[in-house]
Length: 148
Image (tube, rainbow, N blue to C red; front, top):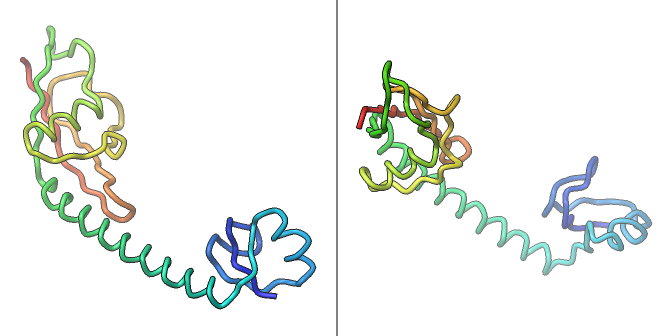
């Protein structure tokens, strides 16, 4: 019997995949647990349409992320912060501050969760920041922290 998986099933397949299983396994386990449903011709056509729409959406998001990555490549974002003696900051500069500076000064809206710092910035200077914009699209840029 052919079924369409509604959830990932270990050892069988992933969500949206059409697999052939024993009829008893499908009727007694997969379908009652909500893990699968019978693969009717209409359902298979619907899955093909949804798969194509998902691919188009992923391509569109990848293209948008690549455009933002091109803008970020080689960019240096300057952030002013209060510092004491020896260049130590009062507090630190984190992802939220960097995202705000990108939005204010460079008109780039990037989610702070997509910015990676090895550790919060606690001194003046230049620091590398990695932006993971989309799976397979990442770019590194610099943040320069200067005294206020």
